[in-house]
Image (cartoon, rainbow, N blue to C red):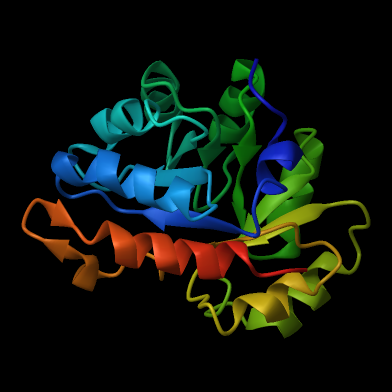
Length: 210
């Protein structure tokens, strides 16, 4: 049975946001991130091998693998068919939102303003991604936008780093943050992954406390 989105968000303080260009990277990346304490993995549907990467990463014990950058009901269905345990989108439309609700899949839609949150609330949603967090005004904007909506829970994503993540995690509505800093381009050498470096970065992220 798939865990509710809040349980997934509370699993670790950081959700790695991953762009997999080479399917050979999928398994070692997942193993290294989970070894470092980050079990929730968001694979963005930005590359041709993303769906296959989800299938591969799900083989890692303890990994909770979902799809990000889901833009429409077709991609939603493809992600679910690949075994995604949760869905993340950069924004929220009535069509995608209703499809996710109907599918019964844990869903974290992107929001950047009060109207987005109100649309989500109309669909029965209460957990949101604040995106792009830094470009949208950072913690000050998040506090202002979330203020009127008691009870919502948020995962800020976009431009966040190990240094700035604690500023977001200190906010009451924030359960976790999303970030890509654990997997920089420097960890790849052809098909090889510097798993020690990824695991160390994941451990530092996992150690962040609210």
